Length: 106
Image 1: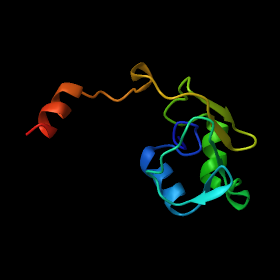
Image 2 (image 1 turned 180 degrees about the horizontal axis):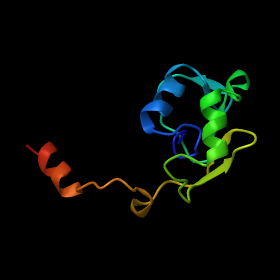
Image 3 (image 1 turned 120 degrees about the vertical axis):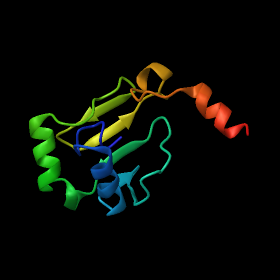
Image 4 (image 1 turned 90 degrees about the vertical axis):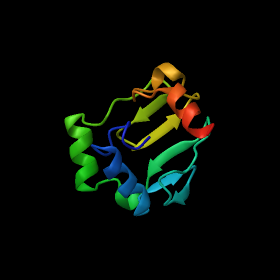
């Protein structure tokens, strides 16, 4: 979510922001990049991290990997609101579900 919101240019850099403790979910600090977010949760940057150089540059340049329709972004407040679960059409990665099922069925 942090990368899609444009707070970080890539997924690895977004994971690093989370792992270094710059992100909160519903006001609680989170440092696990794979944290599962539910519908209605608010993801935001820590007060002390809102003006990090990487965040400010990415928001100003409009970088990121694209904001999907199931997220509401407030770049000035550095907040992300998850308004719905993602549909298959919202996932831009090319995944062959059949291959995943075959791999795990062995």
